[in-house]
Amino acid sequence: MNDQEQQAVFAIEKLYVKDLSVEVPNAPQIFLERDAPEIDVQLATHSAPVAEDIYETTLTATVTAKIGDKVMFLVEVAQSGIFRIAQIPAEQLNPVLGIGCPNIVFPYLRETVSDLVTRAGFPPVILNPVNFEAMYMQQQQESNETGTTH
Image (tube, rainbow, N blue to C red; front, side, top):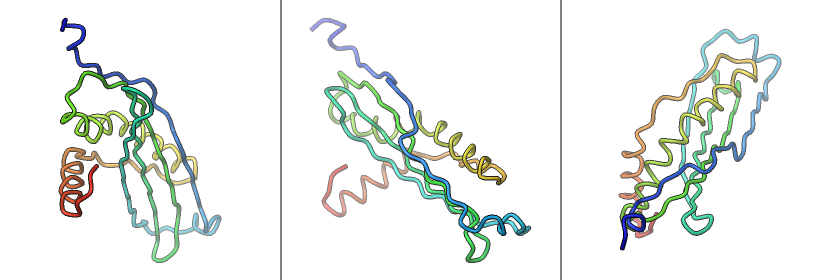
């Protein structure tokens, strides 16, 4: 084998918004509220092969803001990246897809969420940094306990 065949390949092919939605179900009355809302953020990751050595990683964020039982807004964003990954040992592929790729996609997701919330007429919501390594390890542990794979 020559050096070129052994060289690991990791490249970002494309970053894009796969899906998004904004709901402000109680407008316009909700804009009269002065109380601070409770913000709930749910985050999920998913990776899948697209073609040989091409993978898509999608981060999905669901952000819900409520005052009492009234929903101020609901924002859902699926931000994706397409990555070329080759010459990486099989045992390292899932960590790259579960940790490395989400770390690249996350800043774009955070920006899209903030922009959508602002465009809906509310102060921006800035998602806190995420420890994708801990999230990946937890998913692996849960998969091992239930007998499923990533």
